[in-house]
Length: 437
Image 1 (cartoon, rainbow, N blue to C red):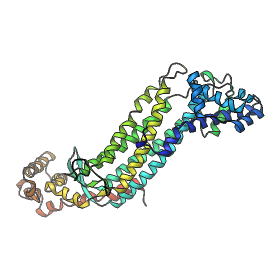
Image 2 (image 1 turned 180 degrees about the vertical axis):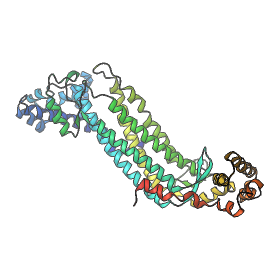
Image 3 (image 1 turned 60 degrees about the vertical axis):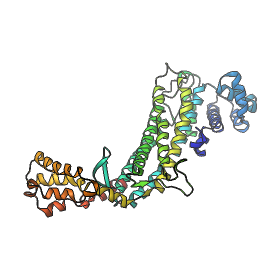
Image 4 (image 1 turned 30 degrees about the horizontal axis):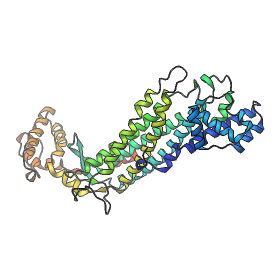
């Protein structure tokens, strides 16, 4: 991934130095297990740990001749270990090293992403509690619907990211498997105890049936969850982008001193961060289909998945890591305008209370069909008015409607326009999302 959208903690996981360190540890731990079984001398296993080293440039040089990355690594390792290097990789195949290493890298990446989610969840909870009682209009199809609160909006996003965290924990466990089973996965030339030992030392579990490769349904699920997390990132980003539109402006991204919004128009304050996050979410999701297509390998193994994973592993995790941290900053610094929320709610002259009037009429004895018609015909009159003339118009029209007024008094109609009616269960929602505290 390009440096612009990368953080060093995540990119380090995919650097050659980390990869070759993991390869070395897999081979060295396997030697320990082989020595314990009496397959190789204990002194040889000790020598591997003591003398084992590698040089990235030298590995690349050897690979240019061998066209095989694991052989290139083992050749370079042998140059440091010496004669005892003949005991390295006993009964193993390249996939044992490659697949086990990828499992380690993906678990390392998952741990960083879980920490990112914890930071985002904390920011969302803080801002949700801050704006728990700030009433704003809820929208469906982009049109005013009924009142909610800005805190409830953010609580909904918190709940979604909390579910994302649970899914990521689950797929971290699912991807954390080790395969040290040899050619076609039968353990013919290596004892299963070696796999058990390596798995334990590397913080993994043994793959039940590896067929020479770890089954790619695990990886497909891992990247699918990353795609779902990216979807949650985009959903919140799109909400911020809509709220920042000039005609809405109920919230907007923080605009720093010295920041510029346009090369041509000095007045501009654009939602560049959340637009960027929308784009980054697309990149993460683009890894999902290739990961799914990697599941159907030929027979016990092929390498059609390899080139895919060399790209989507770093790209998806690095991008999502960056996106989650950026989104945390957006939420923490988000500028919120409750006064504008109130002003926007009043633009339709009370139409947002139409359902409550509808229900009141049915409770008073009118059929639902007749009640709907009565409320709608008065609502349509308000839509036809200039915005400057809408204030109080809906209530006035209803009070002047004979079919309505004969069932509901003017005072009861006015009471149906109480905003508090729509927010009376906010505390219940917050308890469900954040707990009783």
